[in-house]
Image (cartoon, rainbow, N blue to C red):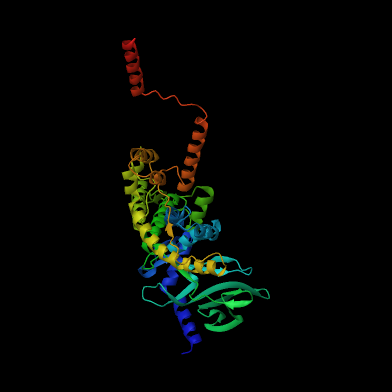
Length: 477
């Protein structure tokens, strides 16, 4: 088997794999494209088999609790900018220039990719102007070929994406394939399962000074939600579908009024049931007759009474189960009523905090790979060699806190721990170094202001000494 045929077989198998389908499903559910939108009301037909019916209410309500959990997790861990803690000031300035606001925006979207597709992808590259940038790929576009069983190092990777094109007036979907190797990027078109080389067929990862250059590693960095590469949608899809179905069923029951519910006809003056439904809907009345034998005509309805409390109880159970399985938190939790203390808040955040710990562990390993490319770029561009410089990446979590209680704890700890540690935990302080500089500046201003006046210091000991001197002078006199 040739390398090209190997890639064709791998792409064909991966494109229809359950793993990739689940990645696409996670993206669709996040965007509100749920299975309930394709739901049909079913009735028992001939032979006892279910068949769809189109003359009954068929509400398709989407209550997107899944998207709420994704946004909650992303904002909890990645809602605030990262902190790159290093003693090397030059390295800190270089990192601040690379990891700017555009990176944080892309990094937050990368967090959504991790939750929806289990694994996100970020690629460092040089643009046409030679600027060092980052590119994000959708999880379902990348087929990785791992070098180890733990899925930490890449041997190569394939990117499959679709582009709409026109041939005359007909729209056509063209599949493009990019193969990322140690030698550079190879380009193909996929036609009927066969890879055909595209123009240009090959490009290096960068061209610097007119010379083609390549990285010594594959410049694709995986960012995983968890080590098992399980997307969030797999944990909660059945619960999300249950919520949508229950709300839709409740709405259907409320819509089944006498115009479209089951009717019992006694001596109906007509021959066609469709005509009866039409007259009832248009005129709001039907004609009945007396058969002459004493049986008078009548119209009755058979309807199931909708118990709203039952639906409400089931929905609360489903939503609570979805939050627990998604490892999120309920912002309407009873523990937040009144004036909650910090222990109650931490208890409410326990599930999402544990899940964020695992996600942060995976992200720390990914940042280690990303910083390798950043350090190589800084060394090659003459900024500096920071290979041996240590940096700690701090994820500033967006946690609800009781500020009054936290400030009081800082006051009680004054004199016991350092002022830097107190400022780091104070809820009003964002930049500890800036706050320390401001404190020193205010101290210097106070010294300069009060230094212009003589200080009158009269201690008790000095007063006693003066009084003793007066007594001695009187005795001598």
